[in-house]
Image (cartoon, rainbow, N blue to C red; front, side, top):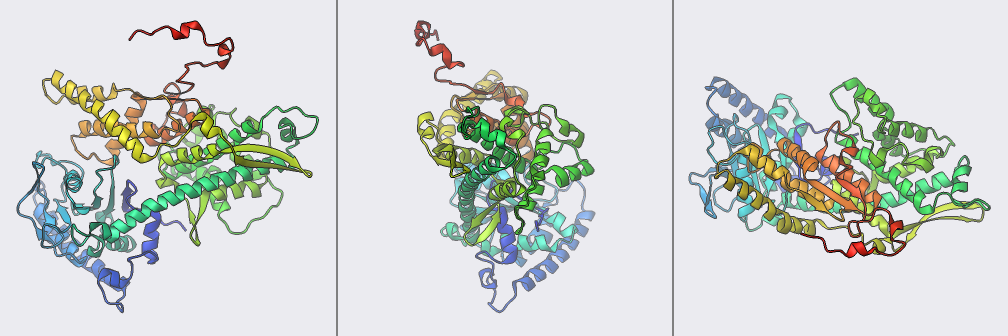
Length: 622
């Protein structure tokens, strides 16, 4: 059964979502009583229950004091003295107030506390509960929000992990100088305490206890939080590799399911595998349609898990979609341990109806669903499969390959909510190693993937994140900095936010071989962060203004070309998910992400049959 953690928010994959369940079960390293500094005979559950009792008592006293406080008071003193410090003490800390601000690279960092005595101990910054963690105080001092202050301090020093809190929201932050995305683990303790949510408090205890953070600067990379983070990164890599395997197996399962179904004689005829019939559909075209079907499924899994499909808050419409049309419903069926081949194919017919909700006719408007359309969801893009049948068994087995993966001895569910959209592209690009074959031998039709050379011929390679970040740093960041500097010079250094916004949104980024959009996504995030900084005045803008800014950048600044039509589809999908524009279909990116050859600039290859025309060699001015 899926547990929903309402008071926990993980940004930037600091922690794998599955780990929270493992912590609560105690099935991951660092969850025995000795790991928290208790005796082997002590029960961790009893210690957490004691801390919970203490927390409720501190909270009640804090709330009474807060009610008596003048409404203009930021409540910094009582947040620290009556609530945050006592709570930290019950979590194994001995917090020490830092009276003097530390100076790093000419900037001052007034971090309020250390985990205990000593400047090498983990930083803890506590502000008043009437201030927000990710917004600067209205007074304008200090110069940064609590989150930005701690994040910048971590990025500039040897410290690896820290805590920032306003008493209500508690954040674990990690050095993220190599990341462009917002990263933190946050618990809403106000919600946990007011809602009497003991289970989530238990998880908070297991992540925020003193034994989780570094002892000091020297051993920062050996602490439990860092172990969990590195494990999360490795797990992400394993999920990506397993998903690649799953997609490959699902393709073969679907291919055979369609080719071998008794009702699909017309498909076998079109493929030319029945003697005396001419080939109408090549095995490669058939393969492309299977791949498109897989990507429809993957896209809907991601969009459903992130609640991107429903426009508005109509609970009844959401229920109807979830129970009768969603891919989640098929995932749950596929994940059941026992089902067999019974000769029915109603699930495929139902899935086709789901796809119709999102095509250019947008029937899904009745259920409050986003329009998708585009090449991926257009009504003519699965023409070879639309009038075919496939057994429920084959369809569910293919969905099972996309839904579950084997991790050591355990079957795990792919968590599409936290899957980076870049992963969809890496999965696709790994499939370029294969070439599809449809064969007929000994009265049996078979679809297979064999190693081919298309990747080499087309020069299609997945760009690793490290290289993308380096490209962003050397090619895009200087352009952004120059744009902002020249705009400020024109304004004679006055901060006219509208002009700065316009300057950023006037930037144009084009990738002439964009593949599935890895570089374009990173560029959108990079410009988006600068835009959110201008709009909010924050060095580390919150997730909502950041998402809005990225969406605006995708709609104004991003362009791409690729020779492969499926890569173009995926690029649009990735940008749509990242910048989710609500009621705008995938086609809103059609004039920005184009299929074509940016090297030759020829849309119709037939015009080259007479040789390259002389006009092509004329020098172009400028």
